[in-house]
Length: 113
Image 1 (cartoon, one colour):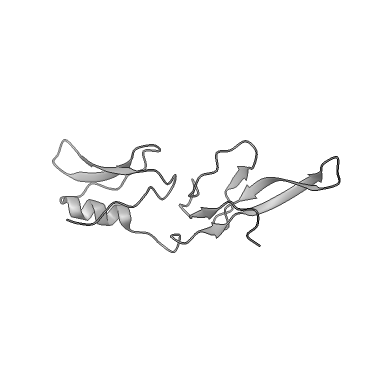
Image 2 (cartoon, rainbow, N blue to C red):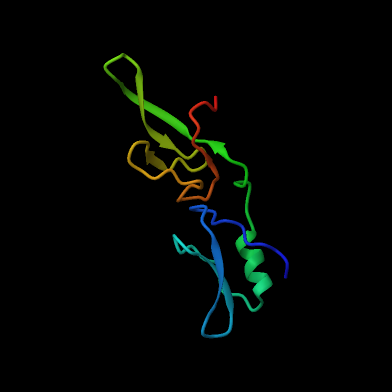
């Protein structure tokens, strides 16, 4: 088995291969604890973890403005995942590399279009 584990599709952190008490294997994120189903072989667990849908390429978050600052500039305080519309508070939420709800890779740059 030479396949390297991809980062967590939800938080972008490193994952590890674990074994269960029934001698099966699964892959789990070291931070958010997302995990695969149990597999007989380590290589099957890695393949299950590394399987991604079309969410591998980052998409720009969609910003929403709802007011103006003292200089008359729009205040963008809400952002949405472009795939599932999961809502993030721009100034309060941690900006994950991946959507917490659907796993879409996110681009947080404000100059993306």
